[in-house]
Amino acid sequence: RMDADGEPSLSYEEASALYMLVLRKAFERGDESMASMSEEEQEDMDAVVATLTKAAEEGHAGAQAHLSMIYGMGHGVVQDGGREVEFMAMAAASGDARMQMMLGTKLRDGRGCEQSHERAAEWFIK
Image 1: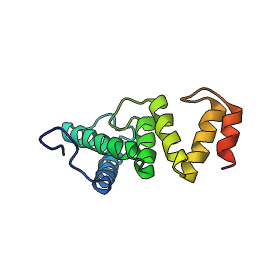
Image 2: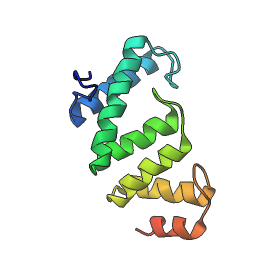
Image 3: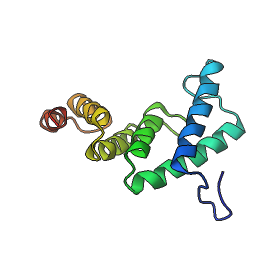
């Protein structure tokens, strides 16, 4: 799923579909945390994360939201609340209302970020 230069060769749409496929397979075998992925599934997730990261850095709100979920759940990556909130904030700033609400909750509770009721309120009223 990577080209000869090690760059992702998937489009955003292909990466999203592949993530959903790997996630569905994991759920079907009762592995909601995706802790026991096959080598092929891990390679797929590596390509998914690389593709979505590139798209997120280019401002794609859907990729930012997907990455927030991936890092928050630890799907194919080490679970990282800081990265979860980082991508959540990108998507929120891009206008994703669901991510705005979730970011407000994270800020209110201080999960994955420094607690700030003032900043949380700003996201809740957007």
